[in-house]
Amino acid sequence: MKTMLFSTGLGLLLAGSAAQAQLKLEISGVGANQIPIAVANFADDSGAPQHVADIIRADLARSGLFKLIEANTVVDANGSVNYGDWKAKGADALVAGSVTRLADGRYDVRYRLLDTIKNAPLSASANAAPEQALRLQAHKIADDIFQKLTGERGVFATRIAYVSKRGKQYMLEVADADGQGNLPALSSTEPIISPTWSPDGTKLAYVSFEMRKPVVYVQNLVTTKRTIVANYKGNNSAPAWSPDGNHLAVALTRDGLTQIYMVNADGSGLRRLTHSSGIDTEPRFSPDGQSIYFTSDRSGGPQIYRMSVAGGEAQRITFGSNYNISPRISPDGKTLAFISRREGKFQLYTLDLASGQEVRLGDTHAEESPSFAPNGKYLMYATEAGRRGSLAVVSLDGRVKQRLNAQAGDIREPAWGPFMP
Image (cartoon, rainbow, N blue to C red; front, side, top):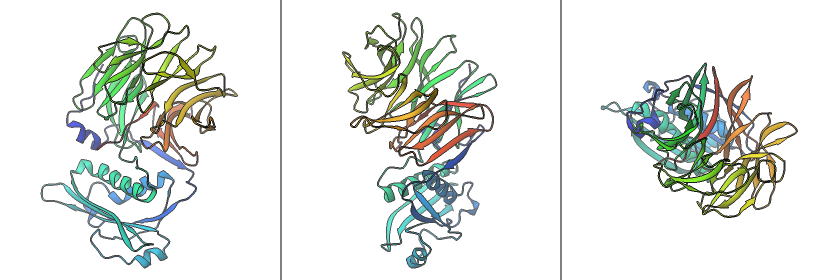
């Protein structure tokens, strides 16, 4: 077993350079109403290691919500702008900026977002960033643009975790939400499954088989310290963080059939939550921390249930198929994502918890491990491409899809991280 050291702190972790093969991103589909926007080239950025304007354009394009108007010219963040010219080109908004190298080696990144319809500025920022944080700075600007023009928080500056397998080696990796800048958090010749982010984005809980059995770990991504939080007799699996980060729900076989337990984040204070005659597993907290959704076969086949975090009676939630697993709750608590087997296919579905309306979002035959973006507008999940595991992202209305493929090997078990400061 080898543990990769994130020795330079969370700030650098979030801005770290790519150490492994990058993922290839493919995009299909667009939103129902695209906002026409021009992202001009940033002044002085020819010497920068990352072209900030290119990263912003790529972020906005893959969201499916923006129509990029050609802007093959430089517009300085502090320069004058002829709003009429850009409006005539069809742009409702213009992004201008500059990237200037400072004497201490950092880069001064300035940007303005301009409304060409109202002839008025919408937003602006100026930040000094080290070279390795330029990509993150570009993602943050894209997030600001996304929020100002759609009213929703952007997720371009968030991170994802996933498990890759190359040959006999399993890697737990952390990357930008677009699959770039990936870094290994753990490498093992034994399987790694079920990564999940702590609410503050500084830790990952996961299951490793390095002890020749499934054991639940929590790994601090800043200090690299790993803590065993569940290593009881039998199987220890399916960790899920409470919204306050103080507890984990886990699935254990220590008392016989798989049941759901709660444990403190340091591994202490174990207590049992379910007492059924079936298999109870895959727990997930509701966003308010008051309920736990989980999978159980207590009705004769796997279905998704909800119970109080204090335990007690459970309410069945899914009925659309005789096989529904992997519950994930949207950040607003209104939508359940899950995997359903229908007509021999395992596909991603969502369920509106108020109306009971189901929507099929998947389009392949073997999908698993859904994970909501922190703004609740996108879902990432594992699927297959050419008999290899790959990751896909779909907007909640199903209109925009992205696929992340590795150049070699399989990638599975995605987990979308939280918003970061």
